[in-house]
Length: 592
Ligand code: ADP
Ligand code: ADP
Ligand code: MG
Image 1 (cartoon, rainbow, N blue to C red):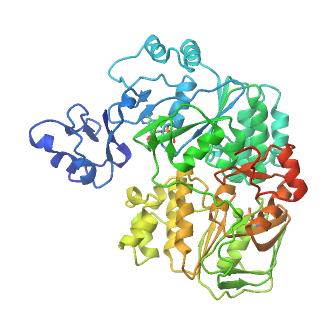
Image 2 (cartoon, rainbow, N blue to C red):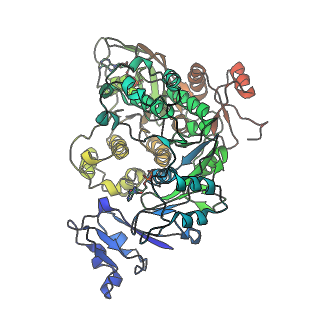
Image 3 (cartoon, rainbow, N blue to C red):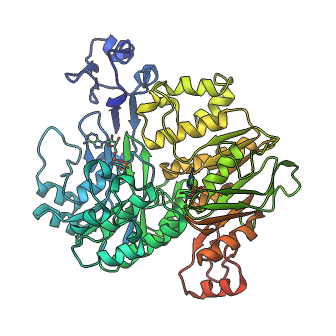
């Protein structure tokens, strides 16, 4: 089975030499295998195409894909027309459970949810004719989805959705969170949602003035307060700190006791505590996606990190992602790269105090702390974008800084911009170390101001790492990145400073990411919005214990070395608290 995909947004026949047509061997022998369709985009006849792949290589905009699929994937669940995205499989929402979907963006998660909510009738890959529900049901006879699809064939199910992108909310609604939330109170749970998500202090503010994290919490409350047949949450963690992530996760678990919930989440520590089962989604983003049968959450996440799905016999990544089993002790013999002095910074409402410290050559330093506690201010002080009380400091090192909130610096193309950051753009090393892991090649000709949040983030990370510097500071690089991209930056960061006289400082709330990249950590403490104190750097064990004891959560490690959040009040949770071991604890008895 072979499918041909035209990425319509990247196909510009008026700007190229229609290489896909000119070089197609079938066209040369007189067939109409590739033509320009009525809509002005390339059209590939899947019947005539022999799959040589020449058009894919010749297209200057990387707009084409020809994919050979394994035998088992003969029948898609849905296809967006010939040359469109194909989805295989479907997740199964289950009463009383949280079902996770784990996979990259563009793999068909939202498409699957549109089908499950009855907004999209699956066409089983037949787009020339109308498909009857009888035919669809026949295909699913005897599967766990049959009953579910039978219900949506008769009526639409009511689904409450927390969409992935929340920045559109202020564009379609003007008023206060109180006004927005009023109409969502369908099951008498609004007050408790507002309370749990700490929305009360901002209820009377203007929606257009809310920060990303505030908007996210309002959006989650609006979804969970509804009375629906099933709930779909497309990422809950963006802009939230780990305290807020835990609060949202607990609220969702409570609702799940009574209602089916489907969730997409790229923060794996949170997905792990939230979901009962996960469907792994793999394939080729924007070309095809396969949603596996449900797997237990522990096994599913471990298979995902391993990059291999034994039941499906599919390897989708050529390397596993590993957690180090013991407390990271590496690098204690490293030389000091730079010392930062004790500093204070006072704003009208907020003050920050930093005990001085040192950063070592070749290390990745993680930074943990709540929102509004001064992490970005600290980064700006080191980067020289802000002066501490009492005058500027001079660091002996050059700093390259990626701010938390990024705006397109111009309407130049990505390539033009990156060339302005480095003289090594044309080297194979640069392509291999920066362009490839961030999947930037298809974006190189795009103007910066047309990029999505995730695309802009990847370009900003590339730009930061491209500049010559001794210290690289990345403020929340995981924001807007999917799980697979997070995996890639993890490797990239460590590799970037390995063996060099340079260091990276990464501020992030994704605890797996921080755990995987960091050699030591800096911990922020205090009262958000009022006062912050930065201490450290500590080695991982001490730093994590400090941070997590404040947070009041403990982690155990499974046999792969992956940290997992303990159930509050469980035997391990109580035992570890009593021993002050919040993070490095290998659970032998449970055989994990
Ligand atoms: P995810 O939720 O995993 O990010 P989506 O289900 O939103 O993925 O999209 C998967 C692919 O389907 C994308 O390449 C997208 O461009 C394509 N797609 C989504 N909706 C449509 C549509 N209505 N028509 C054609 N293609 C679509
Ligand atoms: P974090 O990165 O930990 O979320 P920030 O460093 O961004 O925290 O902010 C800490 C506090 O300092 C917040 O309460 C914020 O409102 C305040 N703050 C940051 N920059 C300024 C500024 N330029 N003027 C006034 N207050 C500021
Ligand atoms: Mg910040």
